[in-house]
Amino acid sequence: MKLERRIEGYLEKRKEEGTFRVLRQETGLVDFCSNDYLGVARLGILEEEVSGEGQLSTGSTGSRLISGNFKETEDLETSIAGFHQADAALLYNSGYVANVGFFSCVPRAGDTILYDELIHASVHDGMKMSKANRLAFRHNDAEDLAFKLKLVKKGVCFVAVETIYSMDGDEAPLPEIVAVCKQFKAYLVVDEAHATGIVGPKGAGLVQHYGLEEACFARIHTFGKSMGCHGAVILGTEQLKKYLINFSRSFIFTTALPPEAILRIKKAYEWLNESEDCREKLQNNIRYFLEQIKKTPWKDFLIPSQSAIQSIIIPDNEKVKEIAGNVRKEGFDLRPIVYPTVPRGQERIRICLHNYNTLDQIQNLVGLLNRF
Ligand SMILES: Cc1ncc(COP(=O)(O)O)c(C=O)c1O
Image (cartoon, helix red, strand yellow):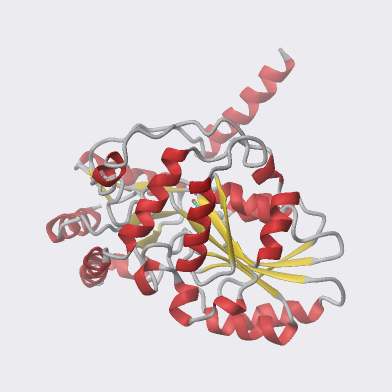
């Protein structure tokens, strides 16, 4: 009974702190919380295209190195590399798995990883599995990055950033970060999870928006957000790809994505070529939300962001949960983000905007927030 008591103790502590996580089923409420920014999953945009290809296997039967590698998988990697102007691409089962797979094996003992203090949990988990040193720099602060890089006297330096930050929704000052990386000969690794499909030419990401492909050692794109499917890819050189195939344990020791998932990713990329109007609609909704929220006292608590992710800081676990709960009762799906997902004092309501939200829904949401 000792283990059960210990587990219960941890759960009780979470409850006492107000940080106990519970699963909620999808509610059918007006969606202001999913990462399906362009409605690809919710509106079933790819369904017709995918079913038109006939029934494909939903099981890949093994890892890529055993029985789970297909011509279609490799063709997809080639075409994704082309789309993103990279030498090579390697698919992973998710963004989490890709970040863990990269950071656990590329930086080695004696190296240093400098990471933005708001970097995603998956990068943290990967870094913990590496023997490299790690050091945080202040969020989006290229000067602090330079200061910290100056402190590192030996080994290879890696710099880990996101392009659109998952919690704050703000954009990395990529050209400044690239300049600092060049100055200190550091290797830049960029996670484009929340920019994929939305930012840059045909949604190719912020790196391509700035034409900084050559300045990145690796880029991670994920498909579970605006691409409306599942999986992720690491972009880099052919040499990096070969290295990952040999050393990245989260690539090697897992069942590969099945043919059905490969087809969905392929269709999602094809769809990106014709989805400009969806991106425009999303941008209109972001502009409209910002106009509306700026008319309320919440504007002072809003983290400045021009992206689909808009966070309002309410530094109190119970308060933020109460507000989100009240809004949900009125039919709008908002989720509170509390400690330990974000640091204490940074608890927030994270509003995700989508192209399929109507202006009325946005106005009603802001009206409701204004009431609570
Ligand atoms: C910045 C960032 N990177 C990686 C991931 C993980 O991606 P996936 O959901 O495909 O595992 C997420 C998802 O929450 C994310 O926000």
